[in-house]
Length: 476
Ligand SMILES: Cc1cc2nc3c(=O)[nH]c(=O)nc-3n(C[C@H](O)[C@H](O)[C@H](O)COP(=O)(O)OP(=O)(O)OC[C@H]3O[C@@H](n4cnc5c(N)ncnc54)[C@H](O)[C@@H]3O)c2cc1C
Image (cartoon, rainbow, N blue to C red; front, top):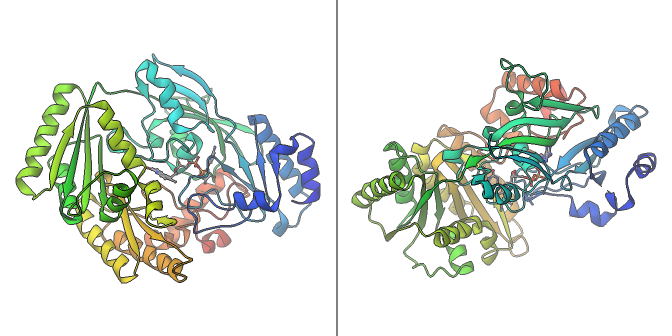
């Protein structure tokens, strides 16, 4: 780190809050994306909102005496579980970790809201809210490690988001530190809010850390359902499983969750969780209804009748046992970790197609994996057309594999856009997909989005290099 800057930080941060050694830089050189790496200028572990303000003001002060190319920028990091390279810095960028700001400041059971610090781990909020029969609904598979700040930045979804909504649906108000180091308030946390104002707290959600560093959030809590039915469906191929998804949605059923895993993912969970599934099982669907008991039983019965009459299934099982339900969801949420049974690395690609196009997309993705000689394992939030093909790999055994993964990912993106899909469902654009933006947006649309970003961060100091292709960043 630049000596002057280091000395300035040492005036108000303790030594163990400043990480600058080669080992530290290496530890923070990626997020869960793994294929993308870059070392930061340094990492600062903030312990309070005022420290974040002070850090930004110190950087601004330092920048006053620097040439344009030598100026320092910054980015917020939560738990680093992001899957689009959002929390990866560059040698001119300082990572500000908000992970230690992790308190639940208030749970208001009557109005079903919680005020939290944004370094809070997602599942910790539901654990505390449970005693009021409330939950924080967005439940990414990473919910035991990712932060709510990261969820808001990426507008994260999760297994039950088809019915209960994504992170931005839960955000009522935000406190954030802007590029000058000043505190700003949006939504219900803005004391001057008028009911006719645009909902800027929601607008801010999904900006991938480019608008400011969120320090507090007022979020909505939802009542925990009275009753659940979870249905496990074992299919002979992904095509049947994909068609079942379309049938369920077409029929007007609204499950809380509708997840699909393919044969590669089944191989991993079968080994890791010793599930004892037969080799015939090539795709599994997990379907869940929640609500009042009578209602969920009716919907489950309708679903079973709809599926059983039209498809040649290996088995279909239902359960209302809460322990069995927990096991099933643990297996689903542990699927990515189970990939370690097959290969040491995985690259997860986040893509979306209209639900009616899932069968074509799944067939297309299988073909792309085969042509590029890649091991495929898919986990899908199928109800909202959000497909996550994973390519499992070992670069030591297969030196050319990373190039083939990049090529295959571009092909997956093209096929999804061709089928009417979009670039990302829930993991954001980050570094990973910024060069794909022109496949989806015109120059005018990207310029407009870039102008909006500049309203919040005129000097582009917050999480630079993200979302926009390099061309747009340079031209604007
Ligand atoms: C095994 C696994 C399963 C996953 N499953 C899901 C899933 O089901 N659904 C889903 O949506 N995602 C999923 N993810 C992706 C990831 O967990 C989410 O994107 C999560 O929201 C990232 O949170 P984080 O705290 O790790 O953020 P980080 O990775 O630290 O940061 C992500 C982005 O958010 C910004 N950011 C972080 N904190 C703040 C803040 N306080 N203020 C402003 N910007 C901030 C960063 O600058 C960066 O751009 C999964 C990841 C893994 C590894």
